[in-house]
Length: 172
Image 1 (tube, rainbow, N blue to C red):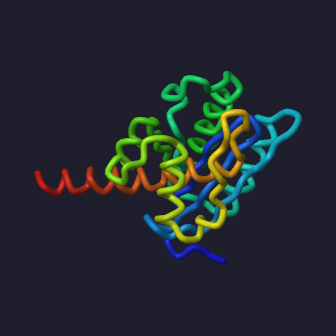
Image 2: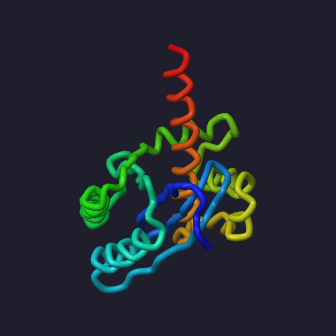
């Protein structure tokens, strides 16, 4: 399957690997999934990402601002820095959005928590709906598929904020 339009690739790192989505347009998912890394997690994640970048050749890679999430580990901060360096060396644009940006984007849908945002993404993007995990109990760890929905939320935020910025530029 070959993409017809430039791809937007979003990644959300977790303690176990990362979730990703590639979109051709605001509501046009191209590919999605999760990657589990055991051992040297950063090296494995970077290796898998390199293969994906070769396969998808995205125009832009989206990340969530690591500082906006209080419990981001040093390992994930190092991973994000390595991802930015990798993308920069390949000429791939990087866009970074804060958790606040994502929450602002989904506020009109009444979604405030990660679970509510993921449920809104699942309703909005039919292709991802069947992958939506059940809400976790307080004693459970987060389902790895939530990383995929966090990445998809970044894409929707990117398109909404980009469209509003474009509209603001045209209005001037």
